[in-house]
Length: 94
Image (cartoon, rainbow, N blue to C red):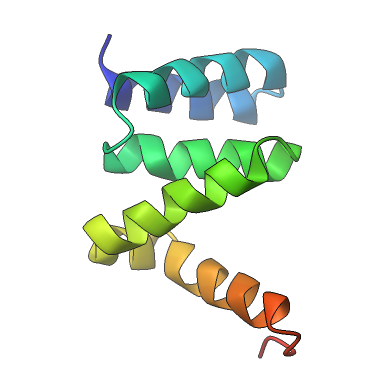
């Protein structure tokens, strides 16, 4: 029950178009360790791309951005969150 390994598996399943399995796997990983950076990243990615649990996915990415800012910036989470914030404020993203 290694959350990081499960997140890697979920991401692989997602790229193989096995969406249901990917969602189930990443949800279990997130339950096991919601503070794991890899799990936060993949949970947000899969849930947002599939339109599931978007609020919880954004919360995971906000936590990732706070707790692992370098990783969040590297994978594009920081920029995405800034864009979402601007959109919510009614501003055009640049």
